[in-house]
Length: 527
Image 1 (tube, helix red, strand yellow):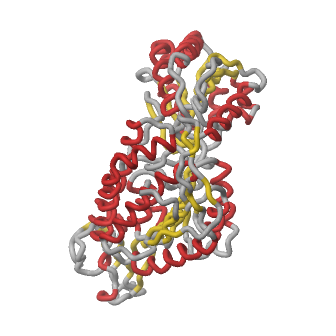
Image 2: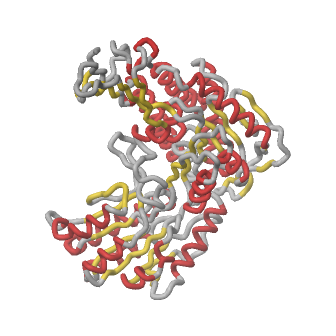
Image 3: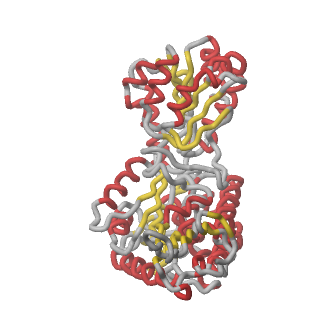
């Protein structure tokens, strides 16, 4: 049952006077439940509990953490239809999307449970002492990854489950041994509270310390700002806008003790369609990309907002078919009136730029909060010179850039901001003639796709969901997949430490049976 209160550790609390409601964009009306925003006192209490919990949680075994994560997954599933209906009422998204995202959330939790139960993820390194080495003896050195402390996670507007309360940031942080404080997203606070209740139940069932998880409500930015500035918070996970992520990064860097902010932010996900592919497949590619642009009402961080090609009859045919196909797709509801208004304004701003031609735009009246998808085109030089056209339009919009030459195309790619993905559409053996362009694209993205669409982020060990700034604040890390755990840890070495006092991961007899690097050799054997 949704209470509208905050979870301060295992306790519900509502000490504040600031309240708000969520909004049903499909019904175009407020939802009934009233939520109470967390106060400074509650923020202080949550941070204190998390700091105290860290003292115990950091040493919890991988087996016990795995049980915790798996129990969270079980408790989320136990919420059943209440969670699905709440999700739908706060997003306007269909039941299938709700269940699909729930499945992804469960999958992430179980993936990290498997990872920490096995245990080799800590990257144990052992260089035993060599007292007889000349001219200098070697000390005994042992290194592993250790958790950094309490983490603040900001819920994402477009993924109320997979990137929010128990999403990838939370799952990976808990797996690493870090307590989590979630700053719930105001657009889906009810969904967030239900998931928070599942996490708290799981923590209690598996004997986790009070404060290992808290969930704070907030209708504005003040709660998030106070959390990021709190001295007991040691890291931040964020998925959202460039403006929001940059503000948190700046705030964290100005603390007396700066902390890392792992923010996944804006991306227009450039798609390069090579000439032979346009010549052979312009119509089929246009149909595929009409679907990709409008998928989820364009509210995915990997939406293909920029398509580039060399001027040709094939590119002209692609643009015409894309324009005709995209308007046949029924408009869909966006997540919130604010998101719909931002989309409409940003789309209109892009369309109003010099030399931009709108090729397709649904002008007919649509239901309130439903997006009117559009396609526009512009020449390469105008795009290169107008930075406004490089900005993300969050929603079902894409700009096709017509380049005069390979040199201009390469120059455009080299001058793009960092992106999550880049795509190359090619006929067989064609890509080898564009190696400098593909290399330029590789320098600008975190993931490069061949003959596909960028929409869709597989949760797998080889996935990289991040990229050069401003796609993310640190291109060395991923927000999706097992390696997402590395954001919340740091390497730590023991020198000449007594074996009996070492953590199990580094003891001579390897009681956990994990894979370790001993004297530069990977092994599970005891020393």
